[in-house]
Structure formats: C-alpha cells, structure tokens
Length: 182
Length: 278
Image 1 (cartoon, rainbow over the protein chains, first blue to last red):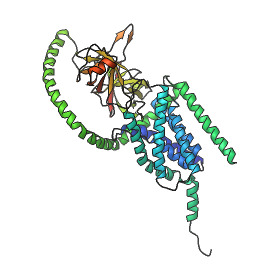
Image 2: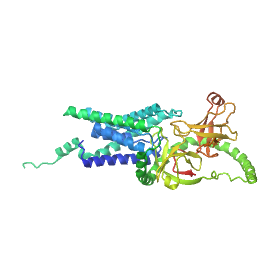
Image 3: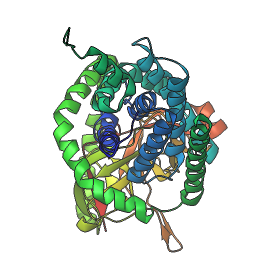
Image 4: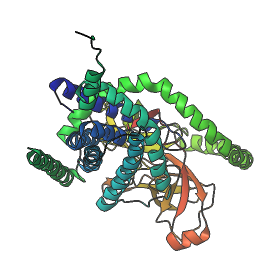
C-alpha cells in the first residue's frame, strides 16, 4: 500500500469511526447475550491491506484511543491489537489472498487470538473477582460475529483505500481500453 | 533495500511494544490522566451524537435478542409470578404497618433518596467492548455536579459508581466490573457481606464473606449496607436495592461463605441512569 497524506487521512478516519461505532453502537447491542467487537476485524483488515507495519501502527492507535476513552490503564488494548494487526500484515506479506473467505476467516481467528490475549493480559495484571465460564462462550461468539462482520468490514476498507492498493492499481491499468491500430 | 525495510519494520514494532509496556506500567492502577480526560472531553459530544443517531438501529437488533431471550424466560417468570403473588399479600400488610410506624417516627417515605443527595439523570453514550471491563460513559460530568465516587442507580437498583469525570461526561464503573466491591446487607435477616461480580456473567453477583453461622434464604433481597466507621464511609448510602438471592445452598454458605445474587438493574441494557450527587 502506498501511504500518501490523503490515504493517511482516510486511515485515521477509519480508525476514529471504528472506535466511535464500537463504543456507541456495537458494545450496546446484544445478540445471543454477547456484544460484537469489530475493532480486531478492522485492524486485521488494515493489516491485510496495508502490511505488517500499517497493521501494527493502526492496532496500537486503536488500542490507545479505546483505553483513553474508557479511562482504563493505557497499553493493554494497544499491545493486543498491535500484535493482531502485525500478524495480519505478516500473513499478507507471506501469502497471497486468493480465496474470498480468507479475510473473514482471518478476522475470526485473529479476533479469537485478540480476545484470548486480552484475557491473558487481564489475568496477569490481576482480576479481583471470580471468572465465569461464560467468558469462553463470549470469546467464541465474538469470533463468530467477527467472521460475519469481517466480510463487509474488509470490503468497505478495501474500497476506501483502493487508490493506495498496488494490486488494484495494476488491475485498473490492465483493464484500460486500447484503440486498435493507434 | 529489502533488508533495510525489514529492519525498519522490526524497529517500529519493537518501539510500539516497548511503548505499550511503558504505558501499562505507568498507568496501571492509577487515576485517569490528563491525556485520557482530554480525549474523553473531545470525544464526548461525538459519542453523544453517534449514540442518538444509532439508537433506532441498536433498538432493532436488541429487540431480536430480547425476543429470543423472552422465550426462555417464560417458564421461569411463571413460577416466579406465583411466588411473588403470595409475597405481595404479605408485603401489603407489612407496608401498611411500615407507613404507620414511619409516621410515628417521622421518617421519610420509602423510595425517596437518601438525605443530601441530588439525582442527575444521564444517558449512556458509550460502553466498554469487553467483559473484562464493565464501564459505561454518560453524558453528564463535573459540569452538572457529578463527581468521582458518586453512586449511580436506575429505577431498579444500584448500577455502580463514578470513577472519572470530564466537564461533559463521566465514566461509571458498574458493579459487574472486577474491581467493584459493594458492602451489602440481606434484608430482613440483616446478614452482611460484600457483593462482588463474576467476570463474564453480568446477571450473577456473589455475596461474599457472609457469616456462615447464619443462613441466607433464596428470594431474600440484598441492599447496600452503607457503613460508616472512624471517619470512613461506604461510597453507597444505606438501602439502595442491589438484587435478589437466587442460589443459597447451606453447603456453599458453610464452605465458601457466599451466595449468588441476581442484580435488580439490567446491567446489559442501560439507557438512562441517575447519579446521586452530594
């Protein structure tokens, strides 16, 4: 991905919108007793489109913003999301995305990784209350939601960042009509 | 060229990881810093706008979830209704006696707020996305007289307390957050304990550290105990309803000195709350 100032503004807008939507909408919505968490899916999509550096930096930024808005200890969410973004980017750099199911499946898998990592960080920091086994159901449901929400999120972000994507640019150039005999 | 890129990428990654650990070390267990308050203040109006704009969509999705949940609740509610009918009759007798006694003692009417507290009604504009933190943001802050440690209630019962404020917003830590502990009393038996959450299960609280020689009964009501001792006092005034005892086996009470309580307030679907300001 070629990050120009205009593309950077778009990425910042995506990050802000995602955080705002998560805290004001998705966290307050309940489906099967669980609220969807779209932030890992957004970071994974950015990592898949922009590479490991973009994934890590946006993951860190999203985490920092969430922790600031929730007035929680800074760094925990950043650490988890930067890892997830980096892993998604690393996948993109090593393998080609040939199947349309790859992005949502990665969203699902890496959301599970993010939720498990966040639980591990919290348990290491110390949880002052007993932990219910329903946490496992919550992790599983969040991952399943990430699969279904990952599809529109990936497509949407890809569309927004399209001018910066090298592959899409090459495809567009190839598709330009040529005048025969000119 | 490629090696240089890889080296730069690794350096940035290392820098971000180190920054995360540094931030975590610096801010864990601390009060909210200037950065957090500043960001909250800037985002407060945006969150409020987004909350209002997205309410119809949110309500539609929640309606589906509630419809599924209601099917499961039907049988439980029918049996609970039968039990409540008998309790209502006993309660009405007690209420009339209570009213007479209150008039005699010149006490204030039941349901009124504790003395010296003014309610500020706020709308929930944001909520934490994970079960590990149970916090909500409301659209009133220090500008409306809300201050840190003020108790927060709904019409059903206690919700939590204010843990951070900006001019126009306040962060409320719910009683289901793992850091929460509320001193509570079972009525009418008077058994005291501490209400603690069970992480991941917002419809179940644990009344811990109860006296194992006295037995709590299923169906009894739990309220805040509002203690005061040696100049220190609880954040929560006496008598705010907390929940109803749902599981109270004698074996569990004797072994682990705890019973399970279902909170009166629906902590998963909060829309309006009242902050009891001093």
